[in-house]
Length: 328
Ligand SMILES: Nc1nc2c(ncn2[C@@H]2O[C@H](COP(=O)(O)OP(=O)(O)OP(=O)(O)O)[C@@H](O)[C@H]2O)c(=O)[nH]1
Ligand SMILES: [Mg+2]
Image (cartoon, rainbow, N blue to C red; front, side, top):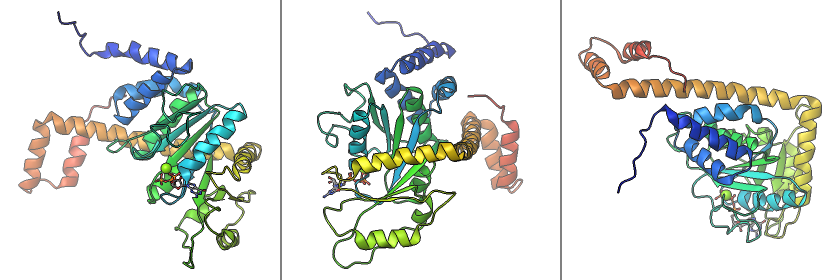
């Protein structure tokens, strides 16, 4: 006998309500499901995020950026342990499906790097977000919002790769950690453009492998105090745990500084502005997609453009004029 599958209608909403309730109660399966909806850019995710929004805004969001292989994942794994020992709940969002977070290899056995891990105070998730109509940054911070609403005290965001967009994502956090490592041999260390402006905390990792002093001198020469905060430069060795308590302390100090100086609100406002615009762009993209897949009108416009009866810009204006704004 075949089970009857209810038609997919707007009655999917009670399901979302249950997911949100589950998430608030700390259910990791609910968190995983919600982040999957975000990854797939499902309209249900928008519904869920609207319901979650009042419960967000409590977590300390820390972004990590730095060249591939510099040790970001290793440092985050260590920090998760460090903050668990301090009684904090920690979430991690890694913006890359290739990041070695699944399988528990990085964190070892005590804390599994998967959402099914047994420690209720840790949730780690790698995200694949290519093709997200709102862009990578929006998808990332929607996932962060899920972990925030789940009650995580800290949420780490790891961006992988050396592109400008990854740097921008990391710097949208409350605290941005820029990770570098000393070069061995006598190669001259070249710092990526923009890196000197965005860091709230600088980490020179892998100090067990090379002499960090010239890099540190280089950094401290170039990094200036901003808005009353002088970014510290810390030395770490992730496998040995060297410098990790100091790094954890620096993150908390920066959070305190943001709160007492009022800069926390400034940063939140700037992120809110970005997110409003990204949501607007996504709405537009969805409307255009609906219209183009609706077919006839779109094909007619394409024909007019080819016939030189209309230019592509005017056709775009026409198609947007047709769009019926929907909230989703
Ligand atoms: N010797 C030494 N090895 C390290 C240190 N930190 C990380 N590693 C090693 O360096 C390699 C890359 O570390 P990851 O933590 O994956 O680096 P990542 O920056 O997250 O790399 P991507 O996500 O690919 O950009 C791994 O083999 C780590 O074990 C360190 O402080 N010392
Ligand atoms: Mg990594």
